[in-house]
Length: 418
Image (cartoon, rainbow, N blue to C red; front, side, top):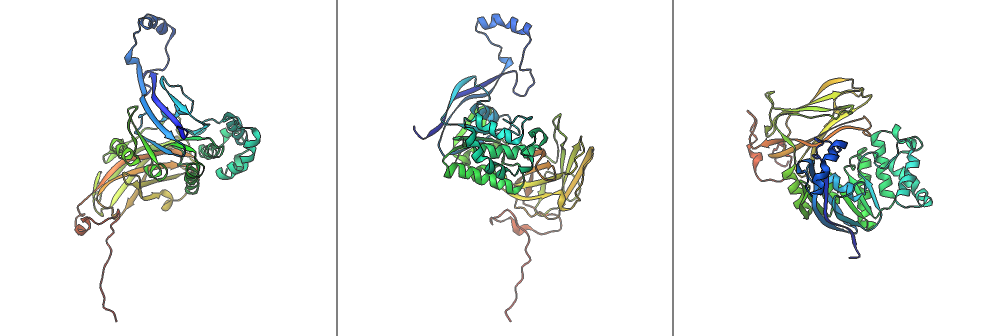
């Protein structure tokens, strides 16, 4: 059909070795020679193969925004890399009608030795644009990204946040017919994020271009996307209805339950979270709390290289991604550097009057200007608020069917008109 922008048929991607990297993706000359007889007989070694995608099929029309969801390892990033022509599929095909612009991760498509300005022109050339076309949009790109000061220095000297801002601005303003975005709408400060969201809406609704988005932030998906695609184990588990896809993702979500959790850092990571703990009023670890109970959150952070300035914060969200409350250490602790070692940050709230139900925690550690992300863990932990009152405090009347996530105990009184 004339309005079809993307058609994916039976797409599959096979890797040698396991997808988690437990086996190497290469072999020695001896192993290759020994495998020749098996290949001639048409035999394979299934234990040495892992499918990241298998049998993926869907269509996307012009102007539609598709939200791709799934837990870690579901095949989302592999799918986007194939659609971006970074990776070749093992089987199947993807037919795309129009230029494709992609922002998959910080620095993708940027040459580290080139300046920001030179990389803008390079990106345009890769999209098949003439230099004059790119020059006409340069001022708009730079103004959107807010990277004037870093435009004429090599991008390797810019923070990851600055690179992500410039990368999004380039991908969004060089007018590809299909825009692919992987987990980058959370870069920068709140105002820049709002500009990104408005730009994506304009791209699809006003300009009629097609957008594919991968994100773990369900509120963003619900705000931007018209359709959903749920991947589970490399296969399509649901497609079409966005709410149904989000419900399926939330059922699959790998947020850890429990009072004491541990996390891993990457080898080259300067700082990150290594532990998280919930505690109740009695000071003991807990994963479920009474309505209105005092809750204590303890975050354990490991620093390998001194952070000259930093911002540590968290948000409490519903399973659907609605932010109920958030805080960061600047609310009560002074700004300054954070030296090497393991640090414990404690946040305590007296009376978080959440309606009974399940809630999720997102934690983040960034530079003080929020342009560089050191560690971001979306929906990394869950806790429950139960239909019971803390000892000595009668809140039983708050457990009826009234709407609303917050149920603070208002002080009511009645007076006579005088």
